[in-house]
Length: 514
Image (tube, rainbow, N blue to C red; front, side):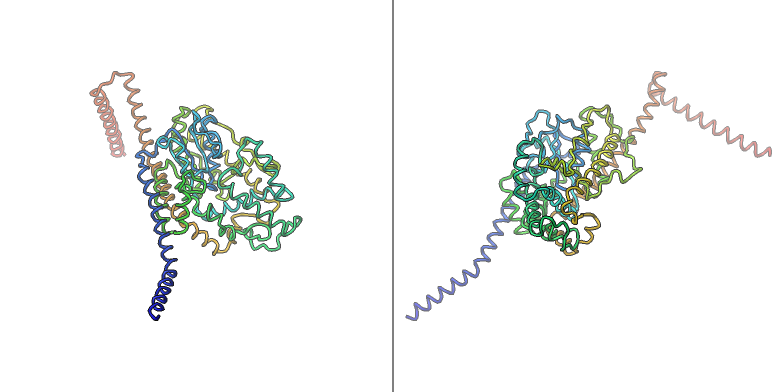
């Protein structure tokens, strides 16, 4: 009897130990599985993507990988629309559902789609460009734009009315709506629903907050920033968004395994190292990498590194980089405030927005391609004029959009009132993006040095051309041969020497007479 009891006790003990160890085994097994998934994904791309030895040369198709809230729409309207014709732009570039890359003259793609979209393009004939932004500022701007667009719906009496009107208007319109575009098709409805819930709770007629801490913490009117960054939606879409977009791992990816890789990296942050290496490698191979914070220099580099090649290939440009340096008389004219860098983010064609301060970009920026011989200088002049209009329209649009929640008056001054703990949390949540941004700054410095070196070579070439032109002028009136050029050069040298000697002798004689 005693032995069966001892065996039973031993069995129960083993069972207890097994149950206790089960979470550890499961956890380790989960990590091992994720490690294999992430490493396998990274290795497959390392093998598939060979480094292009001539990354500075523009290929047949330009893919502008637009990371949200980096000022990319400014480049689209103020640069690319100036140098590409409407026929050359791939139809519906910002609308994944209706995109058609098979257009025969398709030479330009500008899209929020992540890097996996290149699987739909002739990758060996495609150059990629992008712009990065300080991750903290990008999170702020994403929050602000979510509120701005969501607040436009508050002209309706309730959420149901807003959704019904939207469902009626959008199918009739051929324009691309913000609600069709990643990531806003997720972020705007989320913010819109929250805005209506808070308005219903405080009373529709109440337009003043009784719980305001700062512009980013108006709790009874708008979702506070600290709540926004901790929501699962933000973890899924916003945090480390630039890294996931450049690696093709967003929730909008064309890669079927993107969700699993992204989930593993979020669950086991140390695996993010493998994703980060792929992102850095991608940036290294891009034709151009700009920085929102250094907008003036970024614009100049873009004009010379991308714009010049597009115009040169199209045959509409008389390129003279040295003579067409942009004017620096007004540094502010080419410097968009990072807060306002994403002017008039999209067409915003949904219901009633035309009456709510939205501006149709086709009215403010027109296709300037083909107007005589374009130069880099002329392109920069057109850009300066364009962003001036965009800055004004963006300011007016934001003011109109936030009328119903005017106490959320976002500004640089208001950002300084955000608690340091919130800023530190944003940095922590965007660890991959922070490191990728530092890498982008190094690439940007290299681009600047390369362009500076190119200018130096062009200057030397111009000087040599001037010398050659002088010799050609002489030769046109005197049949040139090598010995004649040498004799002519010696003759000039001897003449100068005699003239110098004569002047010196005369001066000495004059001194003696005195």
